[in-house]
Image (cartoon, rainbow, N blue to C red):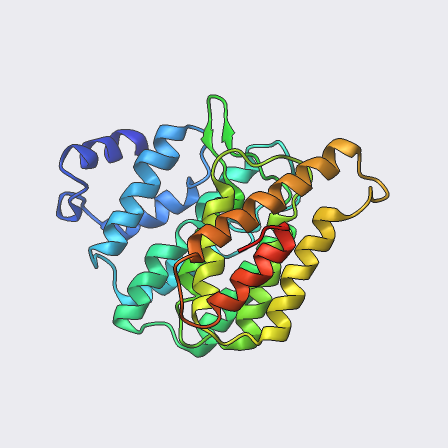
Length: 277
């Protein structure tokens, strides 16, 4: 029986783990195929099964740590990193999507310590800086969606009380690299997913006003900048659009939030967008 057939049988019983002979062994097998270009196998079966079982406490603490380390290793999150337009993107983007359910459970069960979270933050930051394939939906192969999937992981990681101001600022700056993408205009709600990650980072209220102002100014500078060497007018236009959409999404996400630092960030965004309150 193929992996797809096994998982289809599990889907028919609502992914009940007690219907699988060895759930953890099957999970390790799924991790080997997490980047399969078949969108049904990759997205609807492998990812959904793993996320469901993680959320249902099927795995032990040590098993979850192993799955996390697998997701973040060179054969998964950094598999053929730097490639564009190839199927390797699916391995990377569905590996990063394993982080949110594991990190969410870690806040309940405390199986990840400060050093673990610091390592996750370093790996995720490096990935945000290194991923070059930002395709959204790929015809016949489904979602790649690197910026959105990575943003989901950032959003969950930012909840961790182990992360302090320096780590949060580093995440915010790494996220900005994807915001300032010039190779493709985002049309699959990437701006909203990245904005939500930024909201969670900001809600920790650990980043100083000076750093926040500098961060928004850097976005504004890139958006209003003149053509850079090596970039076409189309690429500059796409980057400007992506930045503007992100800033707008961030503004609307915090429009009614009065806790610090949101009022100040709102004012900075309106100024950058040249809009009056």
